[in-house]
Amino acid sequence: MHTKSIAELSQGLARGDFSSEELTRAYLNRINNFNGPLNALITITADEAIAAARAADNTRQAGNAGALTGVPLLHKDIFCTRGVKTSCGSKMLDNFISPYDATVVEKFKAAGMPMLGKTNMDEFAMGSSNETSFYGPVKNPWDTDTVPGGSSGGSAAAVAARLAPAATGTDTGGSIRQPAALCGITGLKPTYGRVSRYGMVAFASSLDQAGPMTRSAEDAAYLLNVMAGFDERDSTSVERETPDYTANLNNDLKGLKIGLPKEYFNEGLDADVARVIDDAIKHYQSQGAELVEISLPNSNLSVPTYYVVAPAECSSNLSRFDGVRFGYRCENPENLEDLYTRSRSEGFGAEVKRRIMIGTYALSAGYYDAYYLKAQQLRRLISDDFKQAFEKVDVIMGPTAPDVAFKLGEKASDPVSMYLSDIYTIATNLAGLPGMSIPAGFVRDMPVGLQIIGNYFDESRLLNVAHQFQLNTEWHQKIPQGFE
Amino acid sequence: MSIKKQDIKKIAHLARLAISEDDIPKYTQNLSDILGLVEQMSATDTRGVTPMAHPLDAQQRLRADVVTEKNQREQFQKNAPSVESGLFLVPQVIE
Image (cartoon, rainbow over all chains, first blue to last red; front, side, top):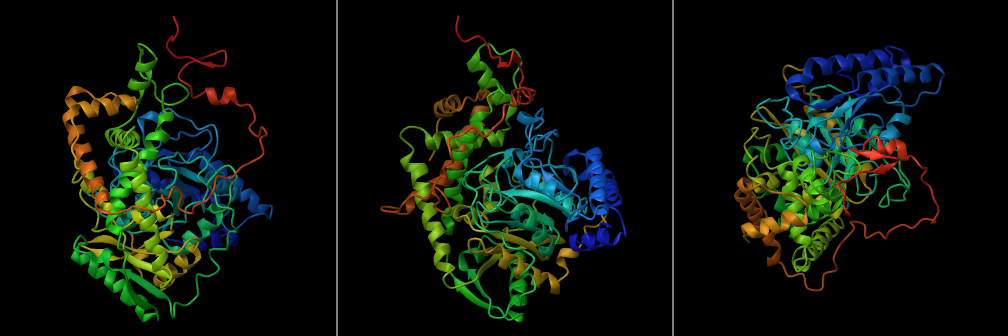
C-alpha cells in the first residue's frame, strides 16, 4: 500500500479495495518499524489517526467522501494542532499543547485526512540540516550518516521513506525545497500569501509560506487544492481565486520557454550535480521546450540580504516567548528580568539565539538604515531581476541545492557555510515567487533536485511542468534501500 | 565586520538573552562571520531604490472594529506556567 500515489489511494478507497482504517494502520506500522533510526517524527498520534480514519470511512459510507477522504498525512510540528503537542522543534514549546488548529490543519481535517503525527524540524525552522532540533537530528533515509536538509527535514525523510503518503512543510528560505532535493522527493513552496499562515508558528513573517511535500507533482497538486485559499485570519493572505491545481497537469510543453540563470550554474555548483541538472533540462528540450539563457544579476546578494531580513523579523516574532503565558519557564526566577532572560536563554538553542541577536543588532538604534533598510532595498532589486526575466520566459530552472546531502556535523559549527546551502532557494522567498524541487537523478547514490521557479500565482504551471517530467522519468519512484 | 565581546553582551541584553562567559568567544566569532557575510550588501548602490517590505507590495487589510474572538481564557491558560484566579503570575514587580 505504501507504494501507491495519492490518486491511486483515492481510487482504492473509492472502490472499497481497502478502508481508511486499514490504510492508516498500515502507515502507522511503517512508522513504528522505520522511524527509530530516522527520528523523523516528534509525536505519533496513533489513536487520533485511527479515530479520524474511522470517521472518514463513515463519511464514505454515507456517500459524502471527497477526493482525499481517508488518505493520511503528517504535519510539520510548526503547525498548531488542537490538543496535540506543537513544539516547533524547541525546548521552548516542549510543553505546549495547542488550544487551536492552524488553518492548514483545519482544512486537511475538513477534507477527511487523518493526521499520523508531527514531523521533526530545525528549531523554529532555523536551519538547513535538521541538526538544530531540540529532539535531535533527523537522518537521511538514503544514507543515515547524512542530513535530510532542513528545516522541513522530518517531513522530507518521512515521505522519502514512505512513512506517509504526504506531509506538510514550510519554506522561509528553502525549507521545503532543499530537504525535498536532499531526500529525493517533490516539494512546492507556493507564492507568498497563497496558503494561510494562521496557526503556523512565525519565523520571518514576510517570507514564511507553507506547502506540500510529496512523492510526485500530481500528489502535490491534490494537496495544494486543499491547502490554498484566502483566510481572513491571516492578514497577509491573498484574496484571489484558487484554481483546480490538477486541471493543467497534462498540458504539453511544446513552446515552453525555460530560463536558465547563468548565476545558478557558477563555480559553487558541484560538477556532478550540474551534469544531472543539464540532463534534466535536455529532457525538457526533447519535450519541445525552448531554452533561454537569462541573468539574475543581483542573485549573489540574496544570502546576505536574507540574513538581515529573516533574523530581524525573527527577533521581533520570538520576543513573544517570555516564560509568562505559555512555553518554557525557568526555575525560581529572582525577578521579572531574570524570568525573561533565563527562560529565553534556557529555552532557545544556539542557532535561534544567534539569529535573534543578529536581528536585534540590525534593528538597534543607529544601525537600522545600514542593515534593515538596505536589505529591503536589495530585496527590491532581487525581485526586479525576476520580473524582467519573466517577461522573456515562462519558468526558470536550475539546481535546488549546490550539492547532495552532506554528513551530519559537517557544517554544524560554521553557520555561514550552512547558510550557503540555501544559495539557490533564498531569492525566491525574498521575491515571494513560487518554487518547486523535483527528483532529477542521483550523484554518488544520493538524490539531486531540479528547481523550477514560476511567476506569481503560477503554481498550476509549475505542477504541469514537473508532472510532464515525472511521466517520463522514474527518479521520483525510487525508494531508499531498507525502506522498500 | 567584527564585533567585540562588549557588543555581544549588549545585544544579548537587548534581546533578553544571557550568554555565559564561556560561550562569549564562540558567539563573537559566529556573529562576526555572519555580519561579514551581510557586509557584502554595502557594495551595491541602492540610492533611490524603494524598500520592499512585502513581496506583493500589498497593503494591510482592514476589518470592522468588532469583537470576533470568544473568551477562551481558561483553555488558553492551561499552557501557562503559573496562573491564579485567571491571572498570569510573575515574580513581584512592585514592593
